[in-house]
Each structure stands twice: as structure tokens, then as C-alpha cells.
Image 1: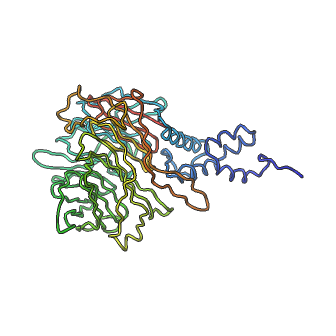
Image 2: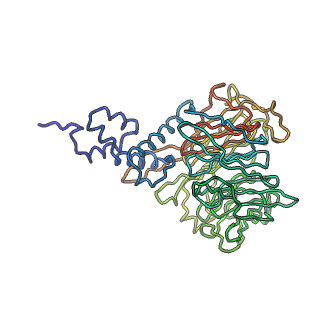
Length: 494
């Protein structure tokens, strides 16, 4: 009887077998023979790896200039390998930076209050806000790693809020709310170099002489504002001028619990989730919130946090099928217990098995969230909490010897009164709360939100001085921090 060896199988059969191997095993199989070296260099092998071991597991490929089906085999292999290396690093017991960069040029006028990584560009563009007036756009250069000032903006008034557009490639890149000559104003800015490759320049494409509330979200043509005293969220289509008013007081006879701050806003088809320091509210609005006419809405669901006092929040959606209409929703809160104000912690809440098609017919049937994990954290100058769509993310905390058991000092609440000497050494802490499964050709195996896995660095492993702002880009594992003295630091984990 003839024995058929693996390398004697037809090429298409071997390609199908390689679907079940990890990226690391595919690379190792190249050592078997010249034939395997050839087969593992084929585009079909790396397209399968991208679909089933990266995208199918809820991860993202680094940014690519062309559609997936048009990328060559060598470039596609590089994208897949980088995505899986990032995954292994962040899931390890102690994730380590692969490269770091301290920008040679400091932000003028020091004190960075906000910092952003523009979504959809693979961490290439960074925008920093300094001293409540100055915007700087940085372009990140690869090989060798470097940073150049691409554009600057000197705001005429004091900046209250800055938000970047969450939809990449859109005409409007950043929105600014200001206080100018006794008036609250807002501008929508474009950055021309992102669209045509010319010399970078900020340009005002829309102006609001009078603007309602604090800016919270910029998504496509929509600007979302929030009025903390009244509890009203306003959606504005900056192109058409139409507005929608979402009134959290309309539930329970107009009672308002007095939320001081809106922490996050998320749009899920025709549902809007508003997270405040008191609780969260769900509204059912017109399809896709396109705002072709002005309208007003009342919440269909409300949940209060109770004794929690959240300072930062983020929302993550995990699809349960290929349509994206059925999903798990995970909410992370970085908060203080009102009964123990000297201790920070992050709580993880899960809204399981949501189906938008069903909720369209029964909008009040949202389930109560389930508290599934709590992690103790050190205090931070700004209670940042950043998470990507994969369930991976970072927060910054003061370096302590044992963050799980030590009592944390009270965080400084007012940045204006802080001095440089008071700002501590801090370290980035990574976390992950998604179980990843392979997506095979025959069926979809979803990722299920699991209790959060936190990687606390050892004291002195990696520290950042005087950190006042941070941002994280999940597709390339890039963390950017800003400091009290105008320094910008870039940290890559891929």
C-alpha cells in the first residue's frame, strides 16, 4: 500500500489544511521543504489567515491603502503577522513596547489637555490640544520612526471641547467648541493633507456663532452635545442644520437625577446610548439618525449606577453573527465608590445577546446590565480609559507596588491647581476582555465578552512622567501620551 505524505497532497488541499494552523505554525511549516516554502508564500494562504485568524476573531488588520482582495501576498503576510504579534504581546503576562518615540519638538505653551489618534489611518496622524488654545497635528513617519509637525491651529478663544470624527475619510476631521467674547461657539475643521496629500493646513468648513452644550461625539455629519444641568443631549447635522433633542428627564415624569457629566455616546443603528455619571439612557430615534428633519425623543430605557461614581467610560460591541444585528454590548467604567472615595477601580458590565431586529419592535425590552468583573487601579491625573473594538485597551495609573491590594491616594480632580512636582510617575496598564474563537467557513463562532484580564506591570518596568492625556489605536497597538510640560510620547506594542 502506498503511503501518501503531507507534501504530496494537491496544492489546494494543503491550502485548506493551513486554514486550521496558527500564523506561527504556517511560518514554521516553511522549513519542511521547498514546496511548502512556495505554498506558504501564496496569496490564498494569507487571505485565509486574514479572514479566519484576524478578522474572524474580532481583531483588525493594520491600515492598508487598497481593498483586501487587491493586496499582494507579501504585503498581506506582513499585515497578518503584525496583527498576530500584537495579539500575542498584549495577551502575555507582561506586554512590552516594541518601540517608543519621544517627540523632539514639544507642543508650544506646554500642558497637553487632550490627545487623539485619527481613526482609519493606522496611527499615522495625531492631534494634540495644549493649554486650552492650540491644536497641533503630527505626522508619524515609519522606518525610521519619527514625528513631524504637519499643521497647527491657534484658536481665537478658550477651547472647551475637542472631538475628532469617528468616521475616517470624512470631510470634517475635528470639531472645536470654544468660549469667545462671552459666547459659546463651535467650528468644524478639515485637514486637507488627509485627503489630497498637499501641504497640511486646518481649515474652517462650518461655524456655529452660538452652540448648545458640551461636545461629546463627532460622527460623520453628526455633532452630539450634552447639557449637564438639564440632562438634554442634542444631535446636530452640521450640513443640513437639522437637530434632534434627546431628553433624559422625560422618563419617570420628568425627574432628573442631576448628572454632572456625559461620559460616552454610542449610536447603534436607530438606538442611541448615553452614558452619564448617574446611569445610562437608551433612545429609539429615526433610522440611522440622519436628521433630515428636526425632532425630539424620550428615553425608552434607563439604568442607574447606584453607589458607583464613574469618571470615564467606554462602550464595545461584539457581533454574534455576520449581519451585525445581534451582538453583546460591554460597558467599562472607571470610577470611585462614593463610600470609599480614595480607591479607583474599573467595572465591566455586559448586556448579552442583543438583537436590533427584535428591539426595533420591542424597544423597551433592553436587558439589565450584568456586572461581570472589577479591577482595582491606581489613581491617575486624568481618569482615561481607552478600548478598541477587539476588547483590548489601556488605562494609565500611578505606579504602586501592589495595585490589587494597596489603598490609592485620592486623584487630583482639578488640573489647573496641580503643580509639576505633584504629578506622579505613571505606567500604562493593558487589559483584554474578549474570548476569541476561530471563524470557519461553514459557520460563525462569535467572541463572547469574558471577565477582564488585566496585566499590571511590575514597579519600574515602564514609567511615564506627568502624563495628562492618552489615546490608543487598536489596529496597530499604538499608545500616545501627552504630558504637563508639552512632551508627546509614542509607544508601539505591535
